[in-house]
Image 1 (cartoon, one colour):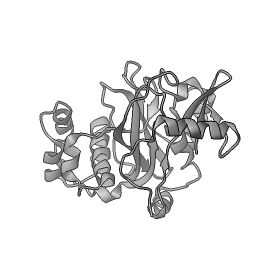
Image 2: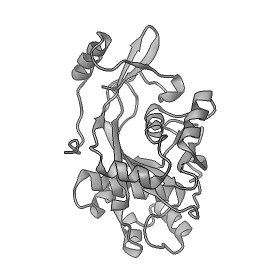
Image 3: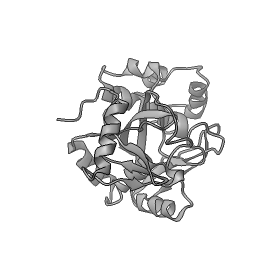
Image 4: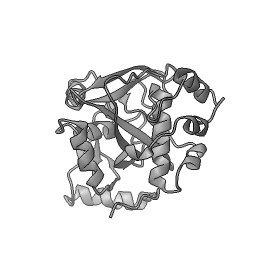
Length: 264
């Protein structure tokens, strides 16, 4: 059985108890994180509720690569970081869902992918660039585009769920999905949010991050590390379709002047 897919909040008291337990040596060890792996202000912010969000690890083969977006240096959230396409759930996303949380997140993921990269996962959408512009300007609704060129949302394979720890200024309850496209698919950055988009091997992205020239926040890094060992999207999708998805609730602690993440 998969982890309960209803959004829920683990209260601060519980997090503090778990953090103390980890410091006593119970459970997994804390991992030191660099400042560029956390949003600005992490560790000192008051507790806020997590925002429902969805993100897509878009894959292609020969060679095996993932699509990543370089956020603008003036972006409100994680400026200058490399991220997967994604964002917060819209009210309209519920209208195309069957009512389950996971399927609502699939709709949100497909919409965000189109808004941020111009990639439409459904049947051919005519005048896609113009319709993307209108969608971003709120002149059309995603449901209108779906009615014209339906999307099989099941092609988005749920692979992870991460809830931002207490202490980070903006918290998200993010569902991560996998999807695959052909090498002929072209991605273009949404200029208000991103500087560029790039197809890159997961291993190369991690390598560049470790060398300091490819900023990644912690959940992005961990989701990349999770797919490094795969040679093709087919292999990865087959494994993740059968997987039981557990919610990852990291704990952010400060010890001896160092910020650490605990993954219970």
